[in-house]
Amino acid sequence: MEKLMQYVWQHRLWDSRGLTTNDGRRIKVIDPGLLNTDAGPDFFNAKVEIDGEMWAGNVEIHVRASDWARHGHQQDAAYDSVILHVVERDDCPVCRANGEKIPQCVMKCSPHFNESYNELVNFDSVLPCASAISEIPSIAITEWIEALAFERLQSKVKRITELLSSFNGSWEDVCYNTLARNLGFGINNDAFERLARRTPLRLLQKHSDSLFQIEALFFGQAGMLDSKEHLHDEYYQHLCREYSFLANKFSLTPMESSSWKLFRIRPQSFPHRRIATLSQLVHDGFVMFKQIVDTKDIKALRQLFDIKLTGYWATHFSFGNSTASEQKSLSNQAIDIILINTVAPLYYAYSEIIDSYELSDRAIALLESLKPEHNTITRQFEACGIKVDNALVSQALIQLRREYCEARKCLYCRIGHRILSRAAVVDE
Image (cartoon, rainbow, N blue to C red; front, side, top):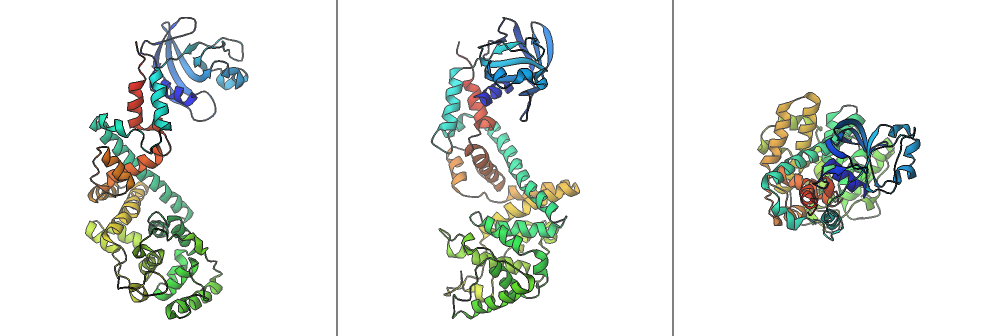
């Protein structure tokens, strides 16, 4: 409830008839202040006018006035700077540590506000505002989508920046780990990231002239090799022997095979084939980051990931029985997802490091040129009337769903804010 009151104060959604202190003085809010998410008063540097006298300082908000003493604020010097105590229920006066009385007011809001808020956060649907989205002005939706797209891109940039720090500024290592993770295509992302961490690029580079040794390292580290299995599969048994030698030489420890998920995955998308793809990309030396930065044409970017599998993996989806020839490793749609989740964030992260507007613009242009992702999330918003015409928009909607809708952060969503703002007006 206190968070809801903070929201009302921050966005000036109180009774349109205004605020008064509990002793009848008129309050004019010049500036509600800055919301404080750490210890101390709720709002810093507020400015309020009380009966024509200007006050500058902090504002504290409680459901009940008696919460002031219950929280021990009367003994905390950090609260001596409070110029106004805002409450829902005035059940006692409050004072500073020196006994001086603090101005206090009851902040009223429409009962419809609480009703609307509870409906949004407690509604048994991932998208509780679905019926109201069509009532929001299109310009407001467009501006929010743009902000969300950059928010999602920045979250990926943050991850890349953290990787850059852990790999001592090596962009190729960052690219390798980012690409490996995204070859998991959601369901196996974490497993691929663990595989990349357990199989560092510096180790792979020592064997980059041998595709077979790279495959042995990857499949062995993935926990997919056991000499007691597939006894009649010559390639598999050869991998087991090679990995045993390399594991002993470099003191390697494999992952748990249970890390990999196969349920509801088409055979063409089995992690075995994705590992074979990663092996091909590492073979002959991994300079993918340089290639990505040097490549401006989207067709040429796609060709970087248009891998044709050879040998065993041209006719297998996993170890064991062979199948019809399937040389192309990644579909066009899968390559676009790699461009969305790997290439665009790398462009943007690198642009911030070298201060290049050209690269940041290239990242945005790439997302705007790619087709949108088609999934449950985008279909939900399309059903509400939101046009999803490129990857920048689909990324924004994924951010909205995961970071706001699923977390029920309606107070921080511009769509939720519009809905709640309308409900906040007190009925005359």
